Length: 268
Ligand code: KIV
Ligand code: NA
Image (cartoon, rainbow, N blue to C red; front, side):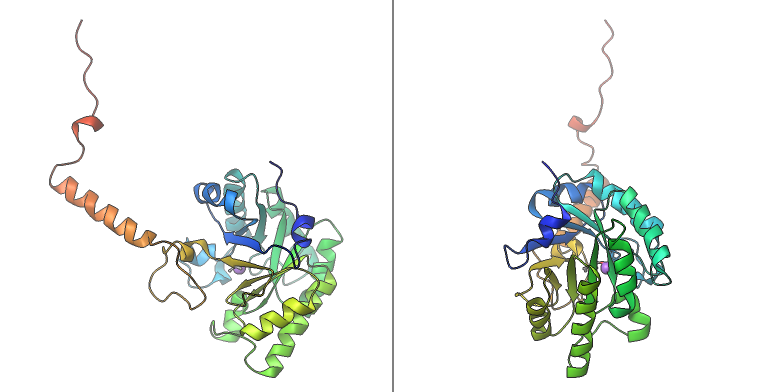
């Protein structure tokens, strides 16, 4: 099977919705690959897998390792990897070097957060062979400027700024946009007004696709799940049950059973 290409994703505007999930590891990528169009190696890996309290501390090295792992576990989905904080904001050349590293590890495209201030960088990358997905609305890498993760675009002024950011990204060459954490009418309006597919998370059912953090979808993340998540499984419950059943079996000497241990070779 040939991997889904970036032009194929770009052509999905107004067609069948794009299905995207984050993935960080080979086994999970292997399970998701038949069902999704995009495996997003999100910098959410820092919080979800590494226990950081924001994405600000995620490095290119971390993203490179997880991109390689996801690549090894997939054959079909396009792989889009986040450029982490600090790897692309200072200059287009920094951005190219970081993006190149991630593409060497198997990414088909990179994603970066921002608006007009990133237009020059998006144009620099796309002119040199690196497809870029933009990310607008709630920008987790800017949490230290914003002070939190509240939904964006509640005031008309902020909504206009976010729409302008989306248009700047697309004009600069972005092939798609993630819209994260905006009021619903704004996500719908951006989707109507840009020519590339939008992929929503906490955005609108009218986006051209949807993405979720896979650990949220699976019910692996703890309490305080955000409003925009729908849990499709309770893996936290399954893991808790399995671990406590194992502990009870060990303490009661019910494990290992005769079928789990190795017999001596009979003397002949
Ligand atoms: O890092 C991430 O997981 C993301 C998605 C939520 C879009 O950027
Ligand atoms: Na991200």
